[in-house]
Amino acid sequence: MTTDPKVELLRRVPLFGTCPHTDLQRIAALADEIDVPAGKRIIAEGTTGQEFFIIIEGEVRVERGGEELRTLGPGEFLGEIALVDDRPHSASAIVTKPSRLLVVGHREFHSLLDAYPSVQLQVLQALASRIRAVQPQQD
Image (cartoon, rainbow, N blue to C red; front, side):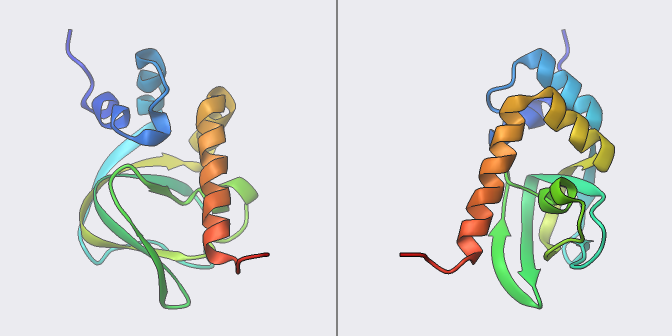
C-alpha cells in the first residue's frame, strides 16, 4: 500500500496531529501543495482572504505596516484570520526562504473546520494566541 505524500506532510503538522489516517486523507484532498520562491508575497495586508496556508518547509515573515510581527516556520499556518471573520487580511506575509506550502481555499477551509472540531479548536487557540501576542498586557 502506497501512502499519499501529502498525507505524510499533514501528519507532521501539529494542527492535524490528532487526526486519524482516514481524516488526513480527506484533508489532503482539500489542499494543494505548492513550492514558493523566497521574496514572494503570498498575502497582502488589506486584501480579501481567499486561502489558508500551512508551512511544510521554509519560512514566512508576517508584517503589518512594514513592521515584522513574527516569522513562521514548518508546521505553522497563516491566513486563517481573514477566512474566519471574512474581513481583509490584517497583515502581509512574505516567503523569506524557498518554501513548500499546502494551500486550502476559502470554501475548503470552512469545510475543514465544520468537519473536524479538533482542527477548529486548534485554529481558534492559534487565533487567541496571536491576538494576545499583539495586544498590550493587561493587569
